[in-house]
Image 1 (spheres, rainbow over the protein chains, first blue to last red):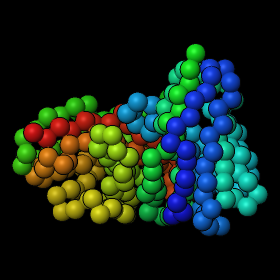
Image 2 (tube, rainbow over the protein chains, first blue to last red; image 1 turned 90 degrees about the vertical axis):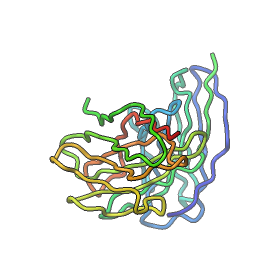
Image 3 (spheres, chains in turn orange, yellow; image 1 turned 90 degrees about the horizontal axis):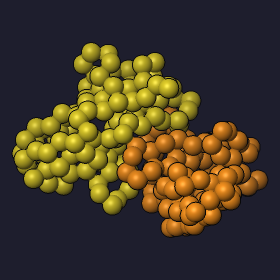
Image 4 (cartoon, each protein chain N blue to C red; image 1 turned 120 degrees about the horizontal axis):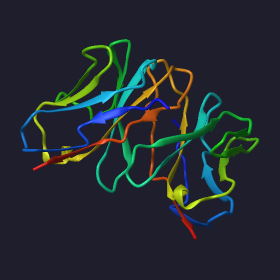
Length: 112
Length: 114
């Protein structure tokens, strides 16, 4: 699976949009971009995923560049409960399931 | 909302003892996973399980580890002879099918080996 690069940490003011970048320049054509987060050692939580089109759900939006070499996760109105480590993962999956490589992620701190 | 449940939440054991961690995946899911996270480190894949057999495993998942789904609902991880370095949080996860990487994780079982 392609390697991803994320900033180690970011801050965001409560109520503002949090934009978390991810580079995945070696992504291949059949690989999806997944975002998960982990709130203080709880189990990881799925947020969103995409292949090449931008995606939006009730939690976040995912913007993937046209060349698919990078993406941005957007939390439109960050709350204190969004403080977590955010993982950008590239994976193609298979019939054997998903061996996700979580990496070190971005530690997002949402401040009052 | 359906969820993955894990027991125990915390287990303390002596080095060399056998440990079984239990998980109840979401009922209609087909794929089951164990991941672990050593304190302060990243979440690591251990094993995936589908159709009553291991479908993929990492280098971490050596002969000391085994998994089974004994009764069609529980999914267990056994560590035969625990080592100090097995101390970690162990996360069970399940997913509905091979066409999505949306894994649902449990809250974890913290294993402390003394």
